[in-house]
Image 1 (cartoon, rainbow, N blue to C red):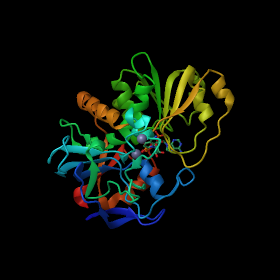
Image 2: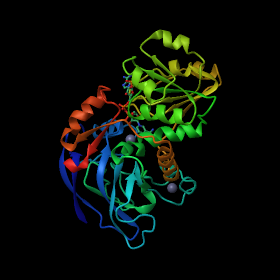
Image 3: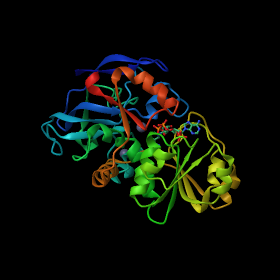
Image 4: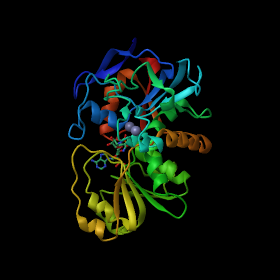
Length: 350
Ligand code: NAP
Ligand code: ZN
Ligand code: ZN
């Protein structure tokens, strides 16, 4: 074991504070990564505040969050072939999986039916708790490590590892592209990447935000249209408009109202993960043979594909870099939707 330092929530809802812990000795297929940057995902807030307890077996405290990890390889095990010291690499939401089930074999490790080992707030195959990227280093099997774009800044690419792939995967799966009308609900960390990616894929993009405050940004990011959901007119005007809606909102919304905005055979994909169940009425689905679906990040192969796509199109996240000591303040600002559009922690400040 070797010492690592980071920031942790010592118990549920506690503010994050400095914390020292052990990481495993690198094994022959392990890559040791010196973490340079880590994005702040809204999921980090849900988890450190234990807001998903109804849907999870356990929450493990102290909890070192962080699953948008970008850094540089500092050493490799004797059998590592994919990476060498000095490579710019990333780690997303999971660090291992069973590797043998049908989903793992298909590159859908995030849906592993045996055991996806999440990057933090989980247990590895030995039962040891995992600790995330608000820390100085991480040890990960090379098969669960991503190669970061060499032509783009590392800090602005860190959030691609969760926010980027979480939008890329459903956009690809539901064929967002030329001739398709796509709406992104919520212009936050996930949503702003949804706008950039859907636009780069060639779709006609609409942002549905609570207000028009961020309209100019939305257009700059690639949106063709922008509407405020606080305006009831929006729902009458856009009834039956979209092929695909991706809903990134972290709070309770009336999903039935949003379903009515879909065309016949349209799909609304839920990626936001609010704390409580949301009821929907059957009529909003039946009325247009509509589908309500969900999606969770993406597998290793698809995450690499997304990173390469971003490298090719010069796509990065709009970020505000913060020192580690300001993480609690950053959390409060995310909760107020006061972020343009992702906080990234500079780990040199740790
Ligand atoms: P975020 O930066 O806070 O963005 C969420 C956006 O939702 C806000 O910017 C805001 O957009 C909108 N919103 C917030 N509160 C709202 C309310 N009360 N009513 C209506 N709209 C509201 O969060 P994020 O990091 O993008 O994450 C969003 C959600 O996705 C979280 O629940 C997170 O846990 C989940 N997530 C899921 C996955 C997955 O794999 N499925 C991966 C990562 C994160 P406007 O200001 O534009 O209205
Ligand atoms: Zn995330
Ligand atoms: Zn599996």
